[in-house]
Amino acid sequence: MKYEIITKPAFSVIGKEGSTNDGEDFIQKLYQAANQGFNEVKELIKLDDNGKVSGSYGLMSDFPRSLKPWEEDFSKGLYLAGYELKSEIKSIPNGWSVWHVPSQEYFLVKLEKGDEYKRVFNDFINYYIPLELRKLSGAVFDYYSLKDNQQCLLFPVKAFHFKRVATKQAQLARCGLVCSYCFFTSCPGCEKEACKCTYGYWCPDHICPTVKCSKDKGLKGCYECVQLESCNYGFFSTGNKSAKACSMFVKQYGKDKLVQTIGKMNELDLNWNKLLEQTKDANAAFILLKEYQEK
Image (cartoon, rainbow, N blue to C red; front, side, top):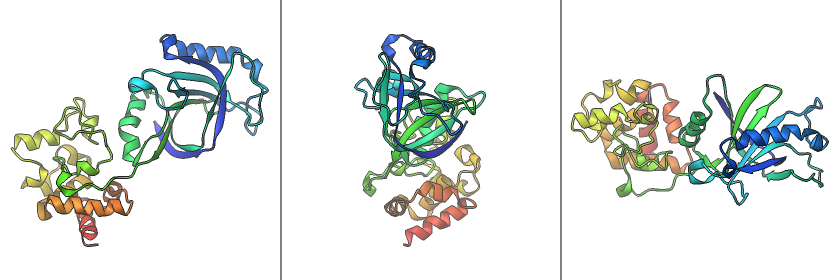
Protein backbone atom coordinates (compact mmCIF):
# COMPACT_ATOMS: atom_id res chain seq x y z
CA MET A 1 0.00 0.00 0.00
CA LYS A 2 1.31 3.42 -1.00
CA TYR A 3 -0.26 6.83 -0.55
CA GLU A 4 0.24 10.49 -1.32
CA ILE A 5 -1.68 13.68 -0.59
CA ILE A 6 -3.02 15.38 -3.73
CA THR A 7 -5.36 18.19 -4.70
CA LYS A 8 -7.81 17.13 -7.40
CA PRO A 9 -9.81 19.71 -9.41
CA ALA A 10 -13.59 19.49 -9.55
CA PHE A 11 -14.89 16.68 -11.75
CA SER A 12 -18.11 14.88 -12.65
CA VAL A 13 -18.87 11.19 -13.01
CA ILE A 14 -21.57 9.59 -15.14
CA GLY A 15 -22.59 6.13 -14.08
CA LYS A 16 -25.08 3.67 -12.69
CA GLU A 17 -26.43 4.50 -9.24
CA GLY A 18 -27.52 2.10 -6.50
CA SER A 19 -27.60 1.77 -2.73
CA THR A 20 -26.75 -0.63 0.07
CA ASN A 21 -30.48 -1.37 0.22
CA ASP A 22 -30.11 -3.27 -3.07
CA GLY A 23 -28.23 -6.22 -1.55
CA GLU A 24 -24.67 -7.24 -0.73
CA ASP A 25 -23.50 -7.58 -4.35
CA PHE A 26 -25.08 -4.33 -5.58
CA ILE A 27 -21.72 -2.62 -6.31
CA GLN A 28 -20.58 -5.45 -8.59
CA LYS A 29 -23.89 -5.26 -10.45
CA LEU A 30 -23.51 -1.49 -10.91
CA TYR A 31 -20.10 -1.93 -12.53
CA GLN A 32 -21.47 -4.67 -14.77
CA ALA A 33 -24.33 -2.37 -15.84
CA ALA A 34 -21.92 0.51 -16.49
CA ASN A 35 -19.64 -1.70 -18.59
CA GLN A 36 -22.54 -3.19 -20.56
CA GLY A 37 -23.95 0.26 -21.32
CA PHE A 38 -20.57 1.81 -22.14
CA ASN A 39 -21.47 2.46 -25.81
CA GLU A 40 -24.42 4.61 -24.68
CA VAL A 41 -22.10 7.14 -23.05
CA LYS A 42 -18.69 6.63 -24.69
CA GLU A 43 -18.94 9.96 -26.51
CA LEU A 44 -19.53 11.73 -23.20
CA ILE A 45 -16.58 10.29 -21.30
CA LYS A 46 -13.41 12.29 -20.72
CA LEU A 47 -10.34 10.75 -22.39
CA ASP A 48 -6.66 11.03 -21.49
CA ASP A 49 -3.94 12.53 -23.71
CA ASN A 50 -3.77 9.25 -25.65
CA GLY A 51 -7.47 9.30 -26.45
CA LYS A 52 -8.30 6.51 -24.03
CA VAL A 53 -10.48 6.14 -20.94
CA SER A 54 -8.08 6.50 -18.01
CA GLY A 55 -10.17 4.49 -15.57
CA SER A 56 -13.43 4.02 -13.71
CA TYR A 57 -14.82 5.60 -10.56
CA GLY A 58 -16.92 4.33 -7.71
CA LEU A 59 -18.31 7.32 -5.83
CA MET A 60 -19.91 6.94 -2.42
CA SER A 61 -22.36 9.28 -0.74
CA ASP A 62 -24.91 9.49 2.02
CA PHE A 63 -28.54 9.06 0.98
CA PRO A 64 -29.23 12.83 0.49
CA ARG A 65 -26.46 12.79 -2.19
CA SER A 66 -24.42 15.43 -0.38
CA LEU A 67 -21.22 13.38 -0.78
CA LYS A 68 -20.90 12.89 2.94
CA PRO A 69 -19.56 9.55 4.25
CA TRP A 70 -21.76 6.49 4.29
CA GLU A 71 -24.00 6.43 7.35
CA GLU A 72 -24.02 4.09 10.37
CA ASP A 73 -20.26 3.55 10.57
CA PHE A 74 -19.72 3.52 6.79
CA SER A 75 -22.26 0.73 6.27
CA LYS A 76 -25.18 2.41 4.47
CA GLY A 77 -25.34 4.80 1.55
CA LEU A 78 -25.33 5.34 -2.21
CA TYR A 79 -22.79 4.27 -4.82
CA LEU A 80 -22.19 5.49 -8.38
CA ALA A 81 -20.12 3.26 -10.68
CA GLY A 82 -18.98 4.97 -13.87
CA TYR A 83 -16.57 7.23 -15.71
CA GLU A 84 -15.39 10.83 -15.60
CA LEU A 85 -17.62 13.07 -17.69
CA LYS A 86 -16.56 15.70 -20.21
CA SER A 87 -17.13 19.19 -18.80
CA GLU A 88 -19.21 20.50 -21.71
CA ILE A 89 -21.88 17.75 -21.67
CA LYS A 90 -25.45 18.83 -20.87
CA SER A 91 -27.69 15.97 -22.09
CA ILE A 92 -27.53 12.63 -20.27
CA PRO A 93 -29.06 9.34 -21.55
CA ASN A 94 -31.91 7.80 -19.57
CA GLY A 95 -30.88 5.34 -16.89
CA TRP A 96 -27.64 7.14 -16.12
CA SER A 97 -26.84 9.47 -13.22
CA VAL A 98 -24.30 12.25 -12.85
CA TRP A 99 -22.62 13.36 -9.63
CA HIS A 100 -20.54 16.53 -9.40
CA VAL A 101 -17.52 16.50 -7.08
CA PRO A 102 -15.90 19.77 -5.92
CA SER A 103 -12.17 20.43 -5.94
CA GLN A 104 -10.60 19.14 -2.74
CA GLU A 105 -7.58 17.53 -1.13
CA TYR A 106 -7.35 13.73 -1.06
CA PHE A 107 -5.28 10.93 0.30
CA LEU A 108 -4.64 8.91 -2.88
CA VAL A 109 -4.05 5.34 -1.71
CA LYS A 110 -2.74 2.73 -4.15
CA LEU A 111 -3.53 -0.83 -3.13
CA GLU A 112 -0.86 -3.43 -3.69
CA LYS A 113 -0.85 -7.22 -3.79
CA GLY A 114 -1.98 -8.61 -0.45
CA ASP A 115 -3.71 -5.43 0.70
CA GLU A 116 -7.16 -6.05 2.14
CA TYR A 117 -9.59 -3.31 1.11
CA LYS A 118 -11.50 -3.14 4.39
CA ARG A 119 -8.35 -3.13 6.52
CA VAL A 120 -6.72 -0.39 4.44
CA PHE A 121 -9.96 1.62 4.61
CA ASN A 122 -10.09 1.37 8.41
CA ASP A 123 -6.37 2.06 8.83
CA PHE A 124 -6.66 5.35 6.96
CA ILE A 125 -9.80 6.44 8.78
CA ASN A 126 -8.37 5.58 12.20
CA TYR A 127 -4.65 6.16 11.77
CA TYR A 128 -3.02 7.66 8.67
CA ILE A 129 -5.40 10.59 8.15
CA PRO A 130 -5.27 11.91 11.73
CA LEU A 131 -1.51 11.23 11.82
CA GLU A 132 -1.11 13.83 9.04
CA LEU A 133 -3.22 16.33 11.03
CA ARG A 134 -6.20 15.99 8.73
CA LYS A 135 -9.72 14.70 9.06
CA LEU A 136 -12.14 13.06 6.65
CA SER A 137 -14.23 15.72 4.90
CA GLY A 138 -16.56 13.59 2.80
CA ALA A 139 -17.34 10.20 1.33
CA VAL A 140 -14.51 7.93 0.18
CA PHE A 141 -14.21 7.15 -3.54
CA ASP A 142 -12.91 4.12 -5.41
CA TYR A 143 -10.83 4.56 -8.55
CA TYR A 144 -9.43 1.94 -10.90
CA SER A 145 -6.64 3.03 -13.24
CA LEU A 146 -6.81 1.11 -16.52
CA LYS A 147 -3.40 2.39 -17.57
CA ASP A 148 -1.63 1.15 -14.44
CA ASN A 149 -4.00 -1.73 -13.67
CA GLN A 150 -4.21 -0.20 -10.20
CA GLN A 151 -7.00 -0.16 -7.60
CA CYS A 152 -7.03 3.09 -5.63
CA LEU A 153 -8.93 4.80 -2.85
CA LEU A 154 -9.53 8.54 -2.62
CA PHE A 155 -10.10 9.89 0.90
CA PRO A 156 -11.25 13.54 0.84
CA VAL A 157 -9.64 15.41 3.73
CA LYS A 158 -9.24 18.85 5.24
CA ALA A 159 -6.74 20.28 7.68
CA PHE A 160 -7.23 19.65 11.37
CA HIS A 161 -6.21 22.36 13.82
CA PHE A 162 -5.82 21.77 17.54
CA LYS A 163 -7.95 23.78 19.91
CA ARG A 164 -6.29 25.44 22.86
CA VAL A 165 -6.76 23.26 25.93
CA ALA A 166 -6.50 24.56 29.49
CA THR A 167 -3.78 22.92 31.60
CA LYS A 168 -6.24 21.59 34.15
CA GLN A 169 -8.18 19.81 31.39
CA ALA A 170 -5.16 18.11 29.84
CA GLN A 171 -4.91 14.34 29.99
CA LEU A 172 -1.51 12.66 29.86
CA ALA A 173 -1.03 9.22 28.27
CA ARG A 174 1.13 6.71 30.13
CA CYS A 175 3.84 6.98 27.46
CA GLY A 176 4.05 10.74 28.02
CA LEU A 177 2.05 12.12 25.11
CA VAL A 178 -0.56 14.79 25.84
CA CYS A 179 -3.91 13.20 24.96
CA SER A 180 -5.60 16.59 24.77
CA TYR A 181 -3.25 17.53 21.93
CA CYS A 182 -3.32 14.16 20.19
CA PHE A 183 -4.28 13.84 16.52
CA PHE A 184 -6.58 10.91 17.47
CA THR A 185 -9.43 13.15 18.59
CA SER A 186 -11.85 10.24 19.02
CA CYS A 187 -9.52 8.32 21.34
CA PRO A 188 -10.74 8.27 24.97
CA GLY A 189 -7.23 7.69 26.34
CA CYS A 190 -5.06 4.66 27.02
CA GLU A 191 -7.02 3.73 30.13
CA LYS A 192 -10.03 2.84 27.99
CA GLU A 193 -10.70 -0.25 25.87
CA ALA A 194 -11.49 1.91 22.84
CA CYS A 195 -7.99 3.41 22.85
CA LYS A 196 -6.72 4.35 19.39
CA CYS A 197 -3.15 5.33 20.16
CA THR A 198 -0.42 5.12 17.52
CA TYR A 199 1.02 1.90 18.93
CA GLY A 200 -1.84 0.14 20.68
CA TYR A 201 -3.96 0.37 17.54
CA TRP A 202 -1.59 -2.00 15.74
CA CYS A 203 -1.26 -4.52 18.58
CA PRO A 204 -3.27 -7.73 18.03
CA ASP A 205 -5.33 -7.12 21.18
CA HIS A 206 -5.26 -3.30 20.79
CA ILE A 207 -3.55 -3.06 24.20
CA CYS A 208 -0.30 -1.12 24.34
CA PRO A 209 2.46 -3.03 26.22
CA THR A 210 3.61 0.30 27.65
CA VAL A 211 0.24 0.73 29.34
CA LYS A 212 0.41 -2.76 30.82
CA CYS A 213 4.01 -2.27 31.97
CA SER A 214 3.33 0.96 33.84
CA LYS A 215 0.24 -0.53 35.46
CA ASP A 216 2.17 -3.60 36.60
CA LYS A 217 4.77 -1.32 38.17
CA GLY A 218 2.12 0.78 39.88
CA LEU A 219 3.13 3.91 37.98
CA LYS A 220 0.93 6.61 36.50
CA GLY A 221 3.18 6.68 33.48
CA CYS A 222 6.67 6.12 32.06
CA TYR A 223 7.71 9.55 33.35
CA GLU A 224 7.73 8.08 36.88
CA CYS A 225 10.02 5.18 35.95
CA VAL A 226 13.69 5.21 36.96
CA GLN A 227 14.53 3.20 33.83
CA LEU A 228 12.91 5.68 31.42
CA GLU A 229 16.02 6.99 29.69
CA SER A 230 17.32 3.51 28.85
CA CYS A 231 13.95 1.86 28.21
CA ASN A 232 13.38 0.18 24.84
CA TYR A 233 10.21 -1.72 25.75
CA GLY A 234 6.72 -1.47 24.27
CA PHE A 235 6.07 1.76 22.38
CA PHE A 236 9.69 2.84 22.87
CA SER A 237 10.92 -0.32 21.10
CA THR A 238 9.66 1.19 17.82
CA GLY A 239 12.27 3.93 17.98
CA ASN A 240 9.61 6.48 18.89
CA LYS A 241 11.10 9.82 19.90
CA SER A 242 8.16 12.11 20.65
CA ALA A 243 6.55 10.07 23.45
CA LYS A 244 9.84 9.27 25.16
CA ALA A 245 10.96 12.90 24.92
CA CYS A 246 7.64 14.00 26.43
CA SER A 247 8.06 11.56 29.32
CA MET A 248 11.61 12.80 29.90
CA PHE A 249 10.32 16.37 29.84
CA VAL A 250 7.56 15.61 32.37
CA LYS A 251 10.06 13.82 34.59
CA GLN A 252 12.21 16.96 34.75
CA TYR A 253 9.74 19.84 34.43
CA GLY A 254 6.31 18.42 35.24
CA LYS A 255 3.05 17.84 33.40
CA ASP A 256 1.91 21.47 33.24
CA LYS A 257 5.12 22.62 31.55
CA LEU A 258 4.76 19.95 28.88
CA VAL A 259 1.16 20.92 28.18
CA GLN A 260 2.14 24.58 27.91
CA THR A 261 5.05 23.80 25.60
CA ILE A 262 3.00 21.63 23.23
CA GLY A 263 0.38 24.39 23.36
CA LYS A 264 2.95 26.92 22.12
CA MET A 265 3.84 24.64 19.21
CA ASN A 266 0.16 24.26 18.32
CA GLU A 267 -0.34 28.01 18.36
CA LEU A 268 2.46 28.25 15.81
CA ASP A 269 0.45 25.76 13.69
CA LEU A 270 3.24 23.18 13.93
CA ASN A 271 2.85 19.44 13.69
CA TRP A 272 4.66 18.96 17.00
CA ASN A 273 4.66 15.17 16.78
CA LYS A 274 6.36 15.17 13.37
CA LEU A 275 8.91 17.75 14.48
CA LEU A 276 9.93 15.61 17.43
CA GLU A 277 10.03 12.44 15.33
CA GLN A 278 12.31 14.09 12.77
CA THR A 279 15.06 14.59 15.34
CA LYS A 280 18.04 12.25 15.74
CA ASP A 281 16.83 10.55 18.92
CA ALA A 282 14.71 11.04 22.05
CA ASN A 283 17.41 13.19 23.66
CA ALA A 284 17.41 15.55 20.67
CA ALA A 285 13.60 15.66 20.77
CA PHE A 286 13.79 16.49 24.48
CA ILE A 287 16.16 19.39 23.72
CA LEU A 288 13.75 20.64 21.03
CA LEU A 289 10.93 20.67 23.58
CA LYS A 290 13.11 22.70 25.94
CA GLU A 291 13.77 25.22 23.15
CA TYR A 292 10.05 25.76 22.58
CA GLN A 293 9.46 25.96 26.33
CA GLU A 294 11.82 28.92 26.48
CA LYS A 295 10.28 30.77 23.51
